[in-house]
Image (tube, rainbow, N blue to C red; front, side, top):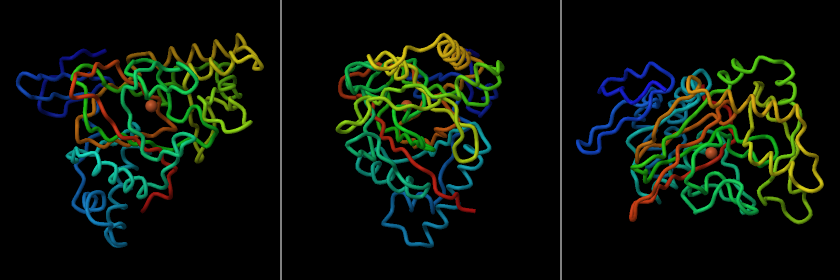
Length: 315
Ligand SMILES: [Fe+2]
């Protein structure tokens, strides 16, 4: 880690993993690893997210602006785009999430109940606990992953997080780009194993007599480029089921190599969403996690999330 010494008002976050430094006593917020991802949306994009239902012309201008941001920050960048200066009213935020999802493509259900906008908050569970609990239901850190790891491919191309209430203690996000992972796993045998299917637990999303696991690789091709879908605990739970094979030594070695790559601080970017920020993440080329947070009474951490299959990015 480069340490919490990036106390400056200029954007000098030149390392991948600059950590958050906040001075709550003075109210100043210093550079963190996400500062280079932050942009202020222009009037057309703001209007398309928060105004009356946009007409075709407004939607086209807003879509083009968002498309430019997505190309520079996700497709050609580090995989994260953060729109700043958003309202923190939940109903308004839910509407904006639906609008941005439609501008980017189509929102996809996040569970068998068909939720398109999920409230991400501490539901007092731990990852993998019980039949249905998920990473996003807990307050704990670790387990860097992609969203939708429990579901069959295709994976959500991107996901959004709209920060309504942030924790003052913890809650930083950690991201690692697939490019950094592939630079660290050079053994072709390990990569071959990651490209062959694992039995991944579906976390109770199966309906009727559907299988409780889905067979899918960690590394695969989607939208014409190498992609990743991963949450280790879901793989281990899937392979522990009675009628599923144990993980082989080769599979365990490949997952260990992947975990070692994402745990390398030099590969990680660490930042903390502020209240009123709407972030868009490349879910095919980025694994992410968070640091453990602690809620305080009356101000529990709350993010709204959508999963999106992308449409054609406007020119
Ligand atoms: Fe997640």
